[in-house]
Image (cartoon, rainbow, N blue to C red; front, side, top):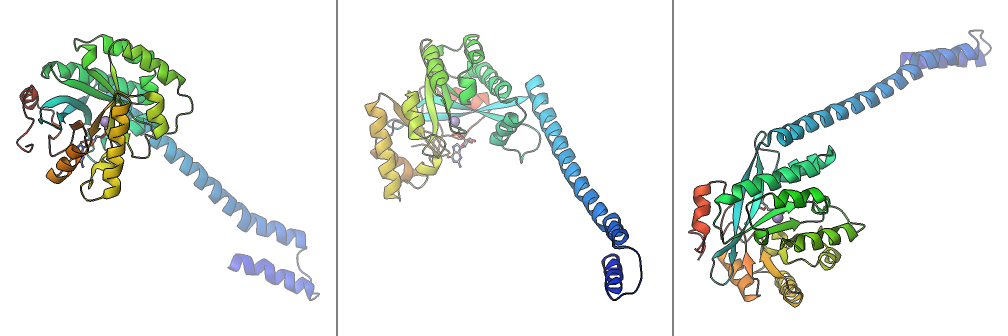
Length: 307
Ligand code: G
Ligand code: MN
């Protein structure tokens, strides 16, 4: 205040004829004392923010790079069961990371995208899945999540071909993380992979990411209905109408349906009535990384929680 009122009083006194310093001197003094420090402060703030962001990205990069280099991630498998007899027909591989438990697996993959390591992390998860999958019963399929960019890459096929797991047991789950402009590379990859007998599943259908355009363009073998639609399907006519419509669409186009996130017996009954082929969720089997649990899945009911 003193800094501002001082020059102001001088200007008023000059206006009343009292002699004092020239206006240019007063303005220069105000600029020197007030404006310049404020600008310096603003500049310092901008630089500090940029520096903080760079530090954050550097830490992020180090965290992701460490996992990519050491291969330090665990695979949990969650069973997918036939809705008619509750037998395990397949599993979904879910990557589990050590370190900070507050960083979810989804966050790890999002962070990897930020620091340009998405494909490396996807391929590491694929590699880890394939080596863990040798301990699975030989009659179940193995589904692994990949981003559309990894799906379209040639590196993926070489990874999938260097495994003892038969290609007709492999399913790639693709979700739409952001709007896809050009489907041509994905359709080409789809043909390349299908020639080897590898199947494609559209993940999270109905969740906002996997649009109808996405499903129609990719013509998947499997459509996975997102938990957001499945949860409470037994109580909501809109949800059950949507599931019924997806089942009809899938069967009309030669695909099968997985309902994700099934948690209650009443949801299970409703989904079965609607014609859903297979179920995945806490009710029919939790994800587990213990190979001793996986051995029970061959040609048998999955867990005590299923009927
Ligand atoms: O997007 P995607 O469907 O691949 O995500 C699978 C995730 O959903 C995994 O992290 C898995 O642990 C979780 N999940 C699987 N089944 C259930 C369920 O019945 N309820 C809830 N809340 N989460 C589930
Ligand atoms: Mn998935």
